[in-house]
Length: 114
Image (cartoon, helix red, strand yellow):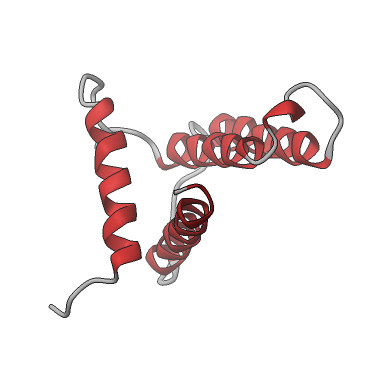
């Protein structure tokens, strides 16, 4: 395998550190896709709020966007018992896109805040 980009390595290190912080939990292997998608929305809401921490509880664009994501999380989690999951040929590529954009945000914020 070719050498990895330094940005990917840094992001992978951050991901591993977060996973190790949660080693005391049961992991994700037995989680439903609906629950994982809901958690993705919740974590994305937290990411949005991290750019404007004062927005918590205020009607700023950051707070409104985060609220929409939390509503999406509730809806996704609520469908879990009723909807059969059918990943498509593009599911893994789209998951990689989400990870890549998260890595890009991590990278530029590291540059900005060292």
